[in-house]
Image (tube, rainbow, N blue to C red):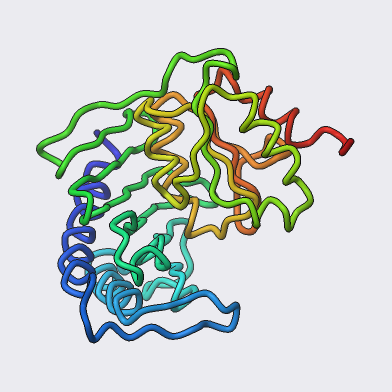
Amino acid sequence: MAGYADDLALAHLLADTADSISMGRFRALDLRVESKPDLTPVSDADTAVEQAIRATLARARPRDGVLGEEFGHTEAAAGPGSRRWVIDPIDGTKNFVRGVPIWGTLIALLEGEVPVAGLVSAPALGRRWWAARGHGAFAGKHQHAATRIGVSGVGRLSDASFCFASLDGWASVGRLEAIVDLSLSAWRSRAYGDFYGYMLLAEGALDIMVEPELSLWDVAALIPIVTEAGGTITDQTGRPPGDKTAAIATNGLLHETILTALTSPKR
């Protein structure tokens, strides 16, 4: 994986550190949870994981910037550059604090504004997913126990497995009726939420995953994995998803159908 082999190896090392911290705090009786200004929860595991990742990146990649959910943007020690790491220390904090095992650490590398490598580690599920631009997407317990993954070939909505994050999120942007219509039109619908729906899409286990709004740290690591698995991920306008945009991911065959359904005028 010339060009990004060292970066992916580092991402796995960062994930190893993150996993050891987060699993040590998962279901801990003394877990500390606070509310951020946006009223979303943050645990002591979130902050500890991000601090540990930042410390390693400062040593290993002093020329790269870092953007993390808990501590914001930090310029590279060597000065502004074109590369930055984007970190979500625990995606699915609400699951984490309730003892639900569907949560993970998201690590992405951006060149300019383009995510070129991404890794998702879900230690409570015993699984990771990763990809680098032009080199395919993989999943397994670790880098040396990997299987190449790819999206499904389902081409009709009536045969598709449809996944969404939450109904209240879509209601808040005025598209609840469209989500309900899609759910009723699909072969099967489920709300797995957070990173997990996108990874199941990349593996071909489901065919559509939609969310109304994500921050950059929520989506950056997902983009290389979905696209290298053969899928398509955009915002509702068909552009690459970014900070505070929707994330519409499909196996590619169903993408125009879903975009049309989500952007058609309300009845």
